[in-house]
Image 1 (spheres, rainbow, N blue to C red):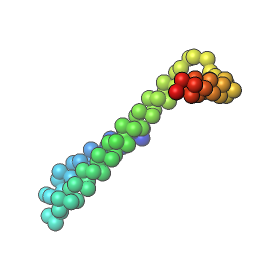
Image 2 (image 1 turned 30 degrees about the horizontal axis):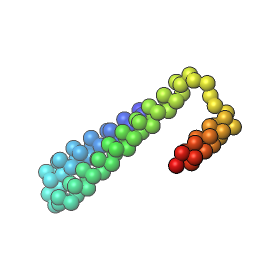
Image 3 (image 1 turned 60 degrees about the horizontal axis):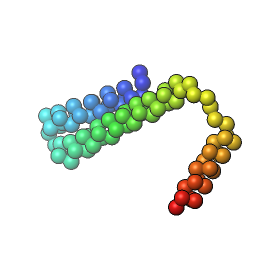
Image 4 (image 1 turned 45 degrees about the vertical axis):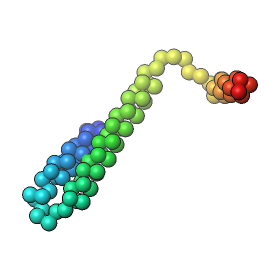
Length: 88
């Protein structure tokens, strides 16, 4: 089971618990329901973030363009920096 799947399941569980809390626990307060909803939102955000990162990593691994050496990357960045500074 992937990490994102676990986060989605946790979010669903927390949302269901928040909806049912007043009937399960008579002394529940709106603050507790709100806290469960907030935790569910955080789990959902974590799942979405994890999926986005996994997609970026997969795209980077699938990229067939030739790599760039460290020296080439530094030269490219330096040249761009110079162009931006001279144009300003």
